[in-house]
Length: 173
Image (cartoon, rainbow, N blue to C red; front, side, top):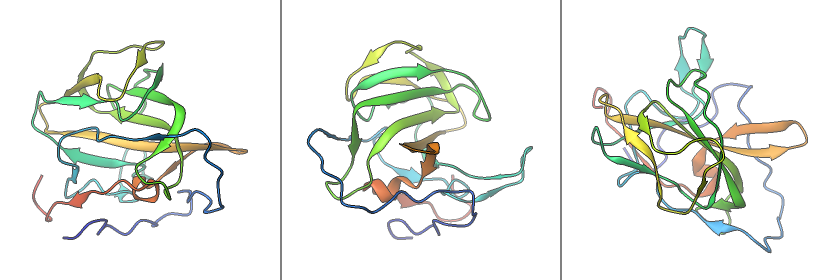
């Protein structure tokens, strides 16, 4: 499949960031969390999840070799480490906000979930490329982005921030 081949809007509870013109005095160009951003056959943004609880997938499941390093996509601070639906989780607040493209929606927070282990904790400052953790034996990491609006933090498709990824063929992890 080609870049961004997953349908991106399957549920009304998923938010699309505003495409308003944003003055960007200070923002950072974001890096990749894993070496090859390829999405698992079941891990596209907005994909239906049976649960429990049933929900729309709020990120991407990126294929990576078990034990490989998951890196900070930008500079910031680790602000949360609670498990939620994603087992071992780390949440990075970007300082300043960032995107993968100068025309992409700005990302305020990045969520790394289903990690095999973590090397950072709440309160730690990280720089682009620093290790966040390692990929679990299942061979993927859940990667999600958020932006902050008047309604609070909202998940959105990383492609809207300029993150280019490839979809795996169905049936291929």
